[in-house]
Amino acid sequence: MRQVLFVSKPIAPPFHDGTKCLVRDLSGELQAFKPLVMGQPGVYERAGVVTVPVYRGAGGFSPPFADNARAAVHLLRSSAADVWHFVFAPNALSSGVGRVARRVRGIPTVQTVASPPQRFRGASEWLFGDIVVAQSTWTAKRLMAEARAPRVEVVPPCVGAIAQVSREAQAEMRLELDVPASAPLFVYPGDWETSSGAEVVAEAAQELTRSVPDAFVVFACRQKSAAAKHIELAMKRRLQTLRVRFAGELKSILPLIATSSAVLFPVDDLRGKVDLPIVLLEAMALGVPIVVASGGPLDDLESVCQVPPRDPHALVQACVGLTNNPECRIELIEKAKGEVRERFSARRVAQQYELLYERALRLTA
Image (cartoon, rainbow, N blue to C red; front, side, top):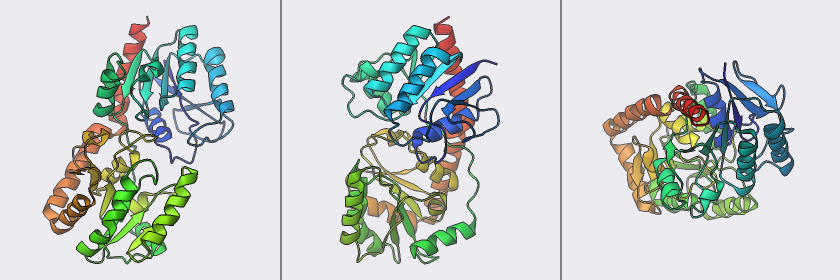
């Protein structure tokens, strides 16, 4: 069977990074190609997936230079895969390695732009794949218009099968956060510092907890930078008199998502995240409504509530509408579950990529 090598961060727990989740879920659903992933021996095992021992650690949000060097050496000297599939956020170092390796080895290459770049102008310097893939229409259009990239395919991120979260796990999560069992609960699972999302939710918190009786707001944010810790401490002081909780980084966010009334994601800057964050697809699959900011990659999500960016009042009104109109809420939930099945399931996305692998092979034959 022909082989495809995923060139990415180490595929190993913890799976808190959207890029790692994408490779994990996509590789497990390939049928026409044998998937090879980069990682450590004995750390990650999945039937049908081969781990190539390239890295020494599980990898953080930015893999160390030594890990990047090991990946480069493997590509230039060892890899015998039929297709390479690069999955990373565009950057000069990784793209330079990919371009050189592709030119030296001549192996057909698919390049997925894992998250929107900080700037699009000049981004064509980072595009080297025989086929370039964006994960949203918004990003694809900007790559073609501002980066003057050639044709860019759009293939969304995917979500693997999710087991229903038990009532016990949901109850335990509420107990840990000191949130009553019957209280409406609105969760923000974004970053502290990258976008205005956390600030918009903070500005909405007082009106939201007043407009929806007994409601709580939960910030479930990882500390991905030195600034994040300071922002979180300031938020705790600022919101200490309101029904607001801070969950921090959880071993699994799914119990919190499953027990929530809605996921709030008024994010206007998705740098460092996949275009459609996996946590949103997980919420849709679990039957939890989502409220997002319009005007960016999130416009590709059809079965969600959209509000203008940087508009706390509109965010509150969307939450009130979801609370007071159960029929519309149920309809939105059912549409979202169907959208995940039809567009974002790992199997559907794997089928799209396998067609691209076939085309890359034909292009370089």
